Amino acid sequence: MRLVLVSDTHVPRRAKRLPGELLDEVDRADVVIHAGDWVDVATLDLLERRARRLVGVYGNNDGPPLRARLPEVARVRLGGMRFGVVHETGASRGREARCAALYPDLDVLVFGHSHIPWDTRAPGGLRLLNPGSPTDRRRQPYCTYMTCTVTDGALTEVTLHRLPGR
Image 1 (tube, one colour):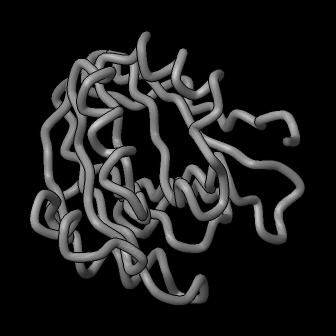
Image 2 (image 1 turned 135 degrees about the vertical axis):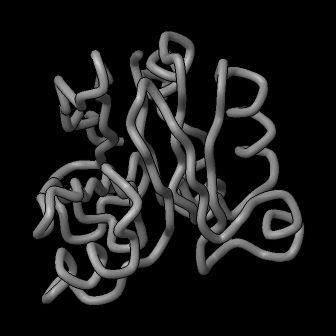
C-alpha cells in the first residue's frame, strides 16, 4: 500500500496551487494523509477528487468550513498498521515521550504544523512522521512531502521528497 503524507499546504496564501509532482504522487497513491493547515476548501475538494482515499485533519490556520468537514485527530488502520493524524504535537523537546503517552494505541503518528520534516521513534516504538510543507519551506532548505509503503503490517520505504524551488 503506497501512502503520500503531506501537511501545511497553505493554498492560496503560500502558493497558488499544489506542486505538479505532488499531485502526480497523489494520483499514484492508495491513500493520501494530510496533517492540516489546508487553509482553503478548494484544496480539500481537489484532494478528495484525486485521491483514492483521503485521511485528513484540520490545523490551526483552518477556519470553520474546513473544521466542519475534518476532525482534529484522525485514526485509521492501513495495511494492518494503526495510524493517527494530528496537526500539532507541541514543542520538539520531549515530543516522542509526550506523543507515546498521548497515543499509546498507534503505530504511526503523522503530524504537521512546524513545516520541519521529522522521522523518529518514541519509546515503545511509535513512529512520528512530519512531511514538512510542499509550499512553504520556512527555514528549511526545501519544500517537502513524504511517501511510504505499508507491506505486511510494516512501514517501509519512507522517503522525504524535496521539491524544486518556485
